[in-house]
Image 1: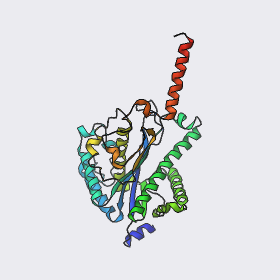
Image 2: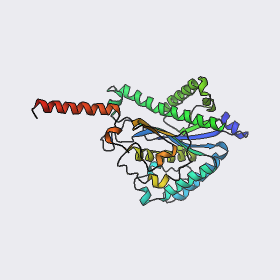
Image 3: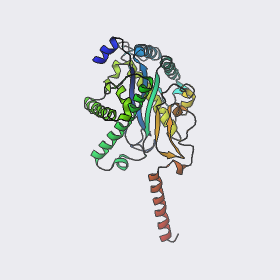
Image 4: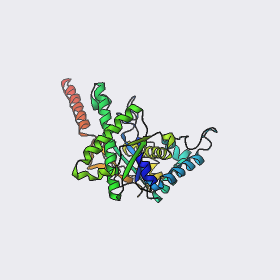
Length: 326
């Protein structure tokens, strides 16, 4: 409530809108029966000064109304009707129905012309099933998944606070609402993280975050809906960078030039292990045509653990072959 009063009295702060990039669960491959979601998880959205929040919201709502007028029911309003980013950035979108992507690009330009920036933080998932990553116990699997998810959120908050410190502004973070139980746990966890990190004299930037993460139903916030579109575009970029035969090869064509200087310098995709000395991709690099994580031999792409498993399997096969006289 006091944030609203502060803004009403003419105060200015940065507002970050975030959404999840994909899901936090385990990943093996796109062809795996169960673990075929996304090779990376994280958070993405945008940061904008509070005095431009309303203009951004109005621009998004009007753009959405024009792009999807043929889909919005007569009894619905453009403000509450949603079009998910995952339905816009499909494998065939660029060739078959480009208008929504063009609309998204116009929204990015509108945002950045008003001093806003896109933002993301993501981590590549170590390849493996839930059992391979977190053990057989279902409770350990759930805890491992939550810790991975929270770790990504903490990193996102750290980087947003660094951005706010660099601009000399305070910050609030608004996210799409989750179910009440998960929301309470996440808010408590985020608050504890910020409180503990703020106590470290080397991380005074965390004081820029003036409240724990806030949650708003996306139906009630055009800007939360736009953050969903940003997160969906970032997910496609992650998949293009990390999957050899990704169906999103159109991503660089659509976004490489556009995204230069449109993201915070704190935005990063962190690889699960080093590939030829490359451990991460920064800001607009995820939208580039070059794919450093894939530009090397298969053996170089493997994590040390995967390489050990392959070598052990190879040794086992050779031992069997020798024993049989082959």
